Image (cartoon, rainbow, N blue to C red; front, side, top):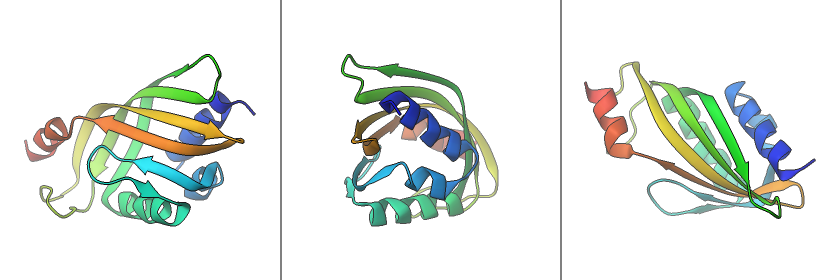
Length: 133
């Protein structure tokens, strides 16, 4: 399986809310670099992050565009996040089922067939505006 296929399968699993399917595509030493905060290293911390996200948000990704570099080990993904804010997180606005549509992007690296790095970008200020309107 190519890096691009691995990443597409990862996001397909995300849209199906198949968390085990996503984790099966992730390297045990994954480096997750979120939009805000410190990187998370390792599948345990990444799994904890995913559980928290599942509790707080219901999201699907649409309008996905993928790009790869010449060696095929890195994949960029641009997409639109279509979500519902279910449970407030510390430091963020109160949650009461607000809907949002937010452009985002991610950069992923695949090593030995597994995703070894995920770096995610989105405009947090814009997201806060969307859920407080």
